[in-house]
Length: 227
Image 1 (cartoon, rainbow, N blue to C red):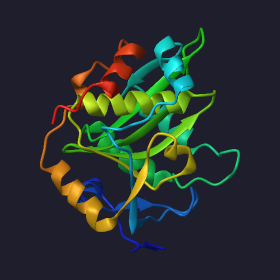
Image 2 (image 1 turned 180 degrees about the vertical axis):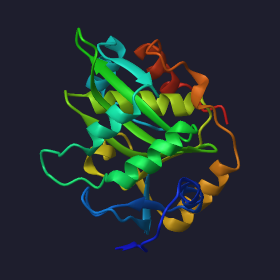
Image 3 (image 1 turned 30 degrees about the vertical axis):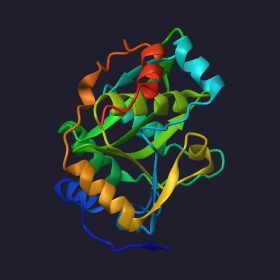
């Protein structure tokens, strides 16, 4: 069960909510209302022990995809909102698009975009909220095999290189457990969140133009923790 309460949300309120450990969701794309969610157990990915499966590491190192950041918010959220094979419903409604688009414009929402093919088509990606040294992952999508996984690996390496201290996944899914995702109790999560919000991280530690090679990404994840 999640603690929920319906409320009219603005971008400013949204940032305060993340800082308090809560986030909004919608029932589905056709429901214009949002409600707060505060899970009793929170999903996190360990920045110092993120696991990259061997086959995926080969894919990242091959640079068969071009990975950019913050160049196509609309394309990423469209991909995340598209119906999935296992469900025709999506929780990304018009208000979610407006709110996170506003936060993207002021630098608190970031995207990781994966492109492939001769035409450089967007085939996967993710988006999330950055606040202090915490990053809150919101949603990801893929249209070809491994595209969202490559986006996640690039995200975690950028967070680690940029000095982030918390990678929030909201919930733990079977998909995320292969990377080391774990659930932590609410009180533990809030302590980690407070510590992360007390620090400053640098999302722009690397360029977002697609020039960061996969070998550098993997090396950043394997480097000793500087803390």
